[in-house]
Image 1 (cartoon, one colour):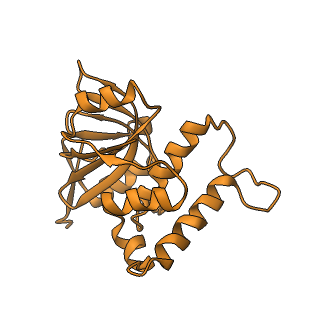
Image 2: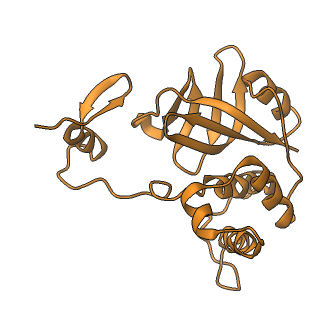
Length: 197
């Protein structure tokens, strides 16, 4: 008998029911995705914001003349910057992620914009910032869950954000992050930080 349950869209599922849901009824185990075991969403948020600001329409896996895509070069430079910092601990960064101050530092190390943390972290403040910026980095926290993403648009009437996200979240609405295609959502998250130029 299974004792562990998972809350998905306000429905309680057993682990086997959750796996079946994730696999569309398949008996195969759920594949591990990027983000499932690492905490690099901050680096991906910087990379995705950079893509937006450059109006990049190419596939991020397309290889340049030197054998790496622009995104792969950015990723390698980001990891080198973290590893070479006197207090940088690459393993800690990969497993625990970056805090807002580290993300601001990393952006400047990579020649990116100088971000500042904006308060309060509200849909209204994001909407205001998006009127002047192509994207804004937002940070979500929940029980045993944290995540950086890029907000593309904010709807003050519905209290929702449209996301450009590395882990397949497409919307934040009513305290819920919703995955692309309506997959399982992370319940009870709150937006606690906003980083903008």
